[in-house]
Image 1 (cartoon, rainbow, N blue to C red):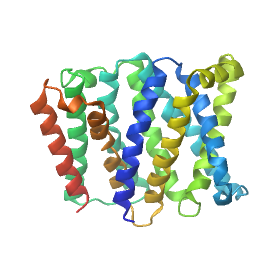
Image 2: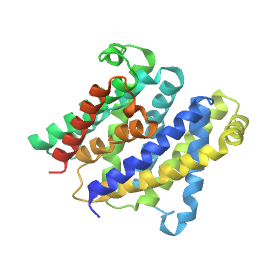
Image 3: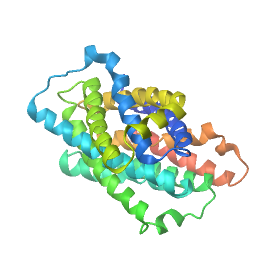
Amino acid sequence: MEWYILVILSSIFLTIQHVLQKKVLFREHATEYLTAFCLLMWIGLLPFHDHIQFFIPARTFLLLYTIGALSIFTWLPWIRAYRHMEISTVEPLRNLSPLVVVLFATVFLSERLDSIHFLGILLIIAGSYLLEVAVFRVPFWQPLQLLHKRYIAQILISMTIGSIVAVLAKILLQSLSVPTFLFWTFFLASFHMVIIQFIKYEGIDDIVKVVRADWKLLALIVITTIVSDYLHLLAIAMPTTLISLAIPLRRLSTLFVTVIGGELFHESRLFQKTMACIVMLVGTYLLLL
């Protein structure tokens, strides 16, 4: 299967996960939710034990440990932002992250994009940003004007760390299976989150409270995340796949979220939403040339 088909399928499941996660975060605290999520993710991966390498070289484990630790600083700022800020501010900024990935992929993986592919990336980012701004009915520059705020600054740091994780993932997936990578990433992330939970919060009581209150939604989030991440990483693991193309293409989830939410068909700002979708589709076409 072609890498871009895997990435597009991944973005569909990412859309479902994203919608479900928003519902949980309306009720739960960010750290409690992320701890429960990470624990349930690696437990949910145990049925695939036949495809997981439990004994790995020390150097590989060190890289996986680094990814597990860094992943927390990638995920937690976004989740806190969703919890404490207006979604209309956070969502458009998510679509700027591929620019950082392109920069890191160029520097550390020597990936080179031609002008057509780079234009496609810019169109997807611009279209998804424009779509989010239209959906939430906020002025175009409002999210960018808040870059000095506390949680926004954390998001920018998160984008940088997430790009490092993407580069390390591309390197490790040349020698590790996708289930092995997923299992160790979430196992080590869980390890760190549990420590944070016990030091700063109420420990196991908070985790149990989240699972009891939202176990059905959490189960669906875990399933959709496993499918989405598996498809995405399967594409990344292909030697010919450029992460500087794959990750921007995954931002099509912005379009899918809008369609599923029914926002695309509201009368308000219909022209702006339509133009944003056209821009994203043109960008996708250029990306696949």
